[in-house]
Amino acid sequence: MYLQMSGNWQIRQSVRPIAAALATLGAGLLFPPCRAGEGPFFITYTHQMEEPRNLELMTKNVTGKPGDGNRFLGTVAEFEYGAAGWWTTELYLDGQATSRENTVFTGYRWENRFRLIPREHWINPVLYVEFEDINGADKALLEVVGHDGVGDLATPTADARHEQKRELEAKLILGSYYKGWTIAENIIAEKNLSHAPYEFGYAIGVSRPLALAARADRCNFCAENFQVGVELYGGLGDEKDFGLHDTSHYVAPALAWTLANGTTFQISPGFGATSTSTGFLLRFGVSYEVAQFGRGVGHLLRGGRP
Amino acid sequence: MKYLASASAFWIGLFAWGHGGSLVQRASSKAGTLSNPLQGTEAQRAGAKLYKRECAACHGEGREGSAKVPPLAQAEVRKAAPGTLFWILRNGSLGTGMPSFAHLPEAERWQIIAFLTGVPPVPTAGGTGKSSAGFPKERRVCARNFSSD
Image (cartoon, rainbow over all chains, first blue to last red; front, side, top):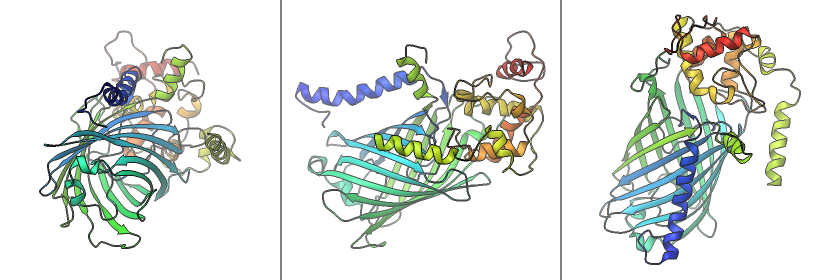
């Protein structure tokens, strides 16, 4: 869906998701904030679930220059809601802008995460299921699977957007906490519903806050508010050609900084480790968690105060 | 939607099955005999800050609870063994909607427990934000709650 467009119908279509996002943000300001985020990771999921009835608003962005292609900025608006203690659901709206090309809305994703065992163990599994309806111009790069590589990102937007991708993605998320360290491993399988074989990928992340105990006073720059980590992620080929041959891999240090008011800023420079990878990707994002959003909305709908 | 509702009921039923009493009572049989390594005013003040950030949205600024969320300003919580509260914070209770706080470093969980089990300061008049014992404003609200149980 182009933002550069000629007809009124197209303008209405593009403004609708933006208006919905602004309305949700406005409603969110009525409710108390709390600490957002699942550590500094952009790609790797931990087994931490969204708290029941909380809503997390987030934007994740990535910029890079794929070989001889034009520099791009891929972005997603993310709405994560704790439907239950064992069930987190999330909606993504994707878009991208490419230098000397177009700015386009590229589709949506709907993901669900299910905690498989109720208590905390040394390793904790979570099942992730996602449906995505995006087009080939999508550059959000929320995961790398199969033989994804620099060539996909260099294709001109006007050509790539004609490819429709309706895909199902499953992940097995394994997470552990050990003496302040967060360790997470994701195993990814993705299937285009209309054609193409199963594609596989992985993501691994390790992180830790700079301080393990909180200070008594409210502070923005104290060490407890910073988390540092590193992610490794990449493709593992497909069912016909499984392995590391002709796949992309990235190493990405990551930093998250949470303000006293609950807003979290994240940044992560990623370095391509193979000739198929984009040389450098810079990711950055902001998140804000609205505590007890669901309960507040329920009260509003019944005519009470949030 | 019917499937989701059935699935929810199944899991909630599964987790609630065979369990009775409060979460503190149920956890006490599973928890170890840990003692809180972080005690004292400083830990309690840090715990008050963490409580406000992590817990107050559900349990209330004054730990008063709500229709569906139990109050924490009650003797059962204040007198609970630290190991029991630590077990609850680590594991949560999916059946009742209490999330796990295992993502917090252990020290921060102990600070919250220090706040929940600490001796409440005597409330003072005035609105400077801190009592004579150095507790932030929300701590004095808790002190009022303690006096009623």
